[in-house]
Image 1 (tube, helix red, strand yellow):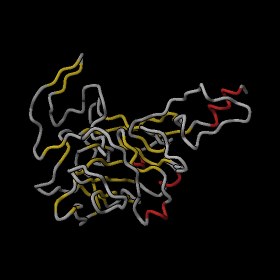
Image 2 (cartoon, rainbow, N blue to C red; image 1 turned 135 degrees about the horizontal axis):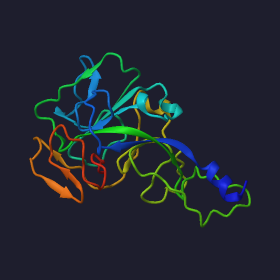
Image 3 (cartoon, rainbow, N blue to C red; image 1 turned 90 degrees about the vertical axis):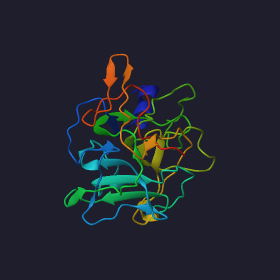
Length: 253
């Protein structure tokens, strides 16, 4: 096996990537999605901060994902909420963000958001796609065979909403900080980069990067039409089409 082939083999992981919109939605409440109606345990309260409801961001059905990291093998579904003001988030789950994991899909019901809850301006159903992921050039998990010069080799790192694979950094890794395994990345921000499950104590800690703000609203669609190339989106609730561009629901820092 040639050096480049061995290098690529050592630095390839299967990853589950979300396709956000662009297809006819199924309407399945258990589907992964951004900004639609989320599931929760029966009788479970909507997460709040200082008495105000958090913004629901996304629901990820891991049972439908083609590749799931070992750290998440016992989780069936994840829901994520965040403070709609999008400030500098704390490190601990349950304050200005809330990540909920459910070991089974059984018994989950659709939650009704509080009347004053902020929401993403547009929701999209998603579906999983199995792809190969690779580390960035400065990823400490990048493996270099003895005698191989990787200075000019660049492998594709998927900076999309994904489960598994490798972390995607906007800037170089901090010196001396090792990110052992990425579990989940939402939009253009990693929300679950490598923290031991035991350390999270029932939740998951996450790192967060400064990025563009998500578009939120306290009301429904503004009804405006938007055209781009051959794709038309009217903002209808039964439409899952979106214009090309960045994924919706990406979290700001």
